[in-house]
Length: 175
Image 1 (cartoon, rainbow, N blue to C red):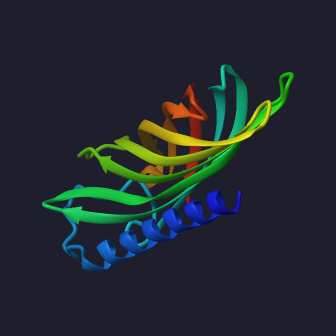
Image 2: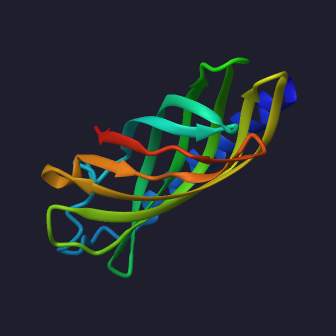
């Protein structure tokens, strides 16, 4: 377990350093369309969401948090950072999953009130069902921001976590 915690902490630290370095070196010119899917588009973006769906072949619900830094390249906006959460399955036997993912998101060009985006994450998950295990985790994350400046969002994350396919529709807010 100590080795797993060390690996997770190392991945999160590396993502934070890489994201911070890339943000510091990014182009400070902002394209006119990049009003951002997050209100604080010049610094780190912190988001929280609630999810309900299928994980470990059972009903699960939970909450997630994301921390990402924007980078502008050739007039396009990308976000790089990390994501974690806690997802609980109340059925017998009870289960839970905690993912630790390095993430990347591309925001599609949009001039309206809706801000579509596509993201992906890769990392590890700690899962408990009939024993605790650490496994590879991967997700794709299509979503759409809405509201003033894209403050709120709806996503449909799906992928593999805890050796199982998952789909956890989410609704969230950017701070």
